[in-house]
Image 1 (cartoon, helix red, strand yellow):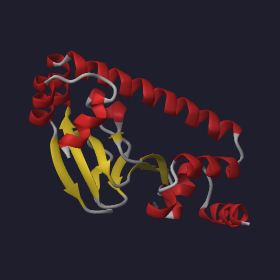
Image 2 (tube, one colour):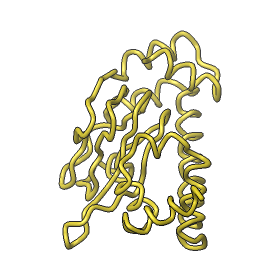
Image 3 (cartoon, rainbow, N blue to C red):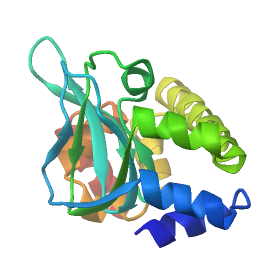
Length: 191
C-alpha cells in the first residue's frame, strides 16, 4: 500500500529515499471492512486517511437524525473531518467506510513531523490542499447552479465506479436530493 502512495505522490513532487522512508515511518497501512466507522462525531479526529482502494464517506446528522453525506472519497485520495483534524477540535462529522478499504492513516502529530522534515512532502500537502479547495468550490457551484439531473450526470461522468459501489441513498444525499428523486433521474437517464 505504501508503495502505491509513494508512486502517486511522486507524480506531483520528487521524493528522495529519505522522503520515502519518512512515509513508511509515519503512515500506517490498515485494512478496514465495509460499514466501519473510522471517526465519530463528538470526538477529535485521530487520523487523516489516504484511500488506496475502496470508498469512504464523510457524513453528519441533522436535528431530525437524518444523515447527510457531504463527501465521498473515491480512491486514491485523503479524507477526514479536515477542519477538526487540523485544529484538533471535536467534530460534528463521521467518517465511515462504504466498501472494504485499503487505507493509510497518519495522526496529526506524525503529519506535522513529516511535513517539517520533508520539503517535498510539505509541497505535496500544499498541492492536496489546493486540489481540495478547487473541488469544494466546484461542488458548491454545482449544488447552487445545476439541476439534480445535471449533478447526477456530472457525478457518474467524473466517478463512474461510484454507482456500482455506493448505496443510492448515500449518493442521493450527497447530490442534495432524496432517494426517490434519484431513482427517477436514473430511470430517465437510461432511456
